[in-house]
Image 1 (cartoon, rainbow, N blue to C red):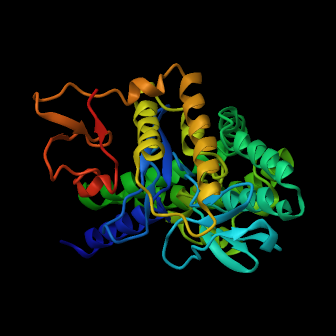
Image 2 (spheres, rainbow, N blue to C red):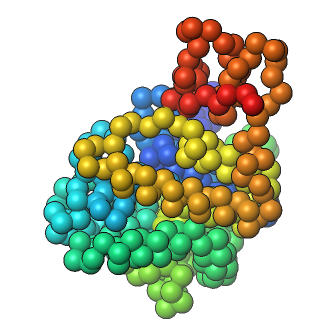
Length: 380
């Protein structure tokens, strides 16, 4: 392999990382391929990783991934606690002891301590705004305010209202980035492996011009986004990311990813996906959420958090079911029991659909490691 061919492979590997967002494993990506939206789950090379990658479309039209996630904490009228993860506090904190809730990038801090790591800055900021000041309210007002915030998280119209101005505001950037992509990843192989090497200067000029144009247009799009309001100024990419997007042609191709990743971070994954993805994919996402909420045997709540977990579970489940019904999907039909494989089958797993025979040693939870504590359902 020639040195130029090796250089080309290095460019491909670096570009693959530019297409990826490094997010918690629970996060989901929504990616549009030729006008059709798809759900893209987080890829983690190892089962022990708490974080992984969500990839945007690597080829034209270079569609970025919208990143959304279920919340990594339980909130109720009496207090809150983070779900068990490394490097976060797991204790239940009653509202009487909460002095300050703030967002620090993607970290949520309660009284200065990190209690949750979010996938997006917009998600962390929306969560901090919803929770800060609740401690000073009476319990009834806390409950009403939390319900209004959950209603906003499950607002299916919000993602479409934000997408339209983003696509319009970044159209010129995406066109210039696509031209840059074609010159690098289509033009370079032509120059390397065909007799058209004499066109090197022309291809190079086009690539440099597209690079400069995309970088300048990206900055202009950022300024327009602040005026139009679809991306609040406080959530614009950090200066370091904007410099990197202009300094490297591979990063410039993916500059719009920085904007799209924050677009749906404050929405529930089901609400963000509902108006975009086909019904078959929405059923798959909705079924996974229902299994989690109805049948997963979670960790025991920390002392004092049982009531909050019950409240949170009921409120979230009600909104998940309503979101599915609004799209013409019956939640109960999604979890209908399969036909028993035999007369001795007494239970089945609602996650993997494995069936179990009766006996003294019959398990209560699914033995499949990927189901991770799903409680079995009895036939009949």
